[in-house]
Amino acid sequence: QLDQAHMVLTYYEKPGAIPLVLDNLNGEILPATERTDLLPVYSFNGGGLWTAKQRGKGKFIGGSDKVKLWKDLESRMGG
Image (cartoon, one colour):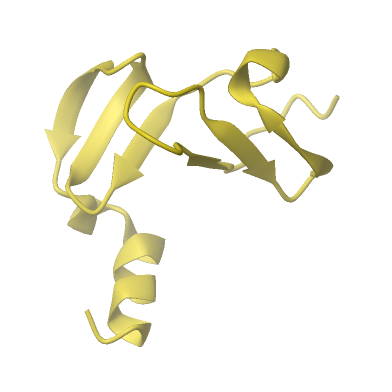
């Protein structure tokens, strides 16, 4: 357990599903229900940036353009 901030990616097979967590610090892809070591702070997608988004509840704090690395990725992909 590192006790430090890092980013993970979650994948939802369909809306409302329990997401799978992809984490570069953990070689296993596990359901979020099995990743009790993670504490959500921010969440973002192409539509925006939220604080502590859990189960669809969170405070919208702006467009996804506020996440520089996301903007850089979109730029490299021609978005």
